[in-house]
Image 1: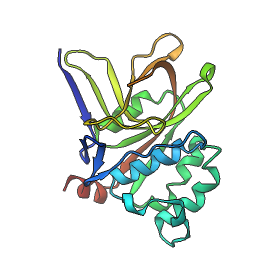
Image 2 (image 1 turned 30 degrees about the vertical axis):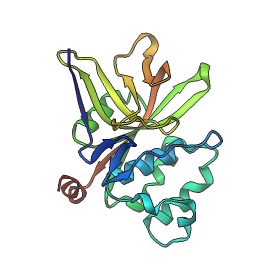
Image 3 (image 1 turned 180 degrees about the vertical axis):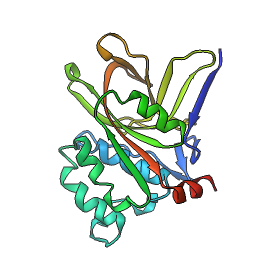
Length: 212
């Protein structure tokens, strides 16, 4: 049985992994930082054409532009991580280009709806038993043909990219007992809770630019 996958129209993939405008997209966090939300948000901004790979870096915080404002607000949380509304506040410099809706409860339906209109979602996943409290970027959605069970296609900043794929992990959206979902990557399978989401939709002007 074939699989049907839908991902953001700006995304392509090569042997290096996901690409945007011929530049590598994936940003992998270190083992020491708590910046999974930062990395996910910057990947989203690159997909939306609001940030370019060559512009990245903490040194850019000194610049008087949108990315500099982003880093000035975000850098204090680079090692300790960010809760949903704090993470959303980092997008303030881009508020004229992208809307951000924070979903705190049962976000699965909102996430799927956002992805189907070519939006992006930064999703919060948890597993208390594993001390997992993590952000990843949902870039698409997929399922087996004829099957209603959907999977989120994720770019997880905690793990390396995969060659020839615009994602490196998935979460199955059929909630099991007590709301558990199945997370899978090349080397890991575990149950997680989908706890929060930041749903990102570009403004009409940005959406037209993306389609062009």
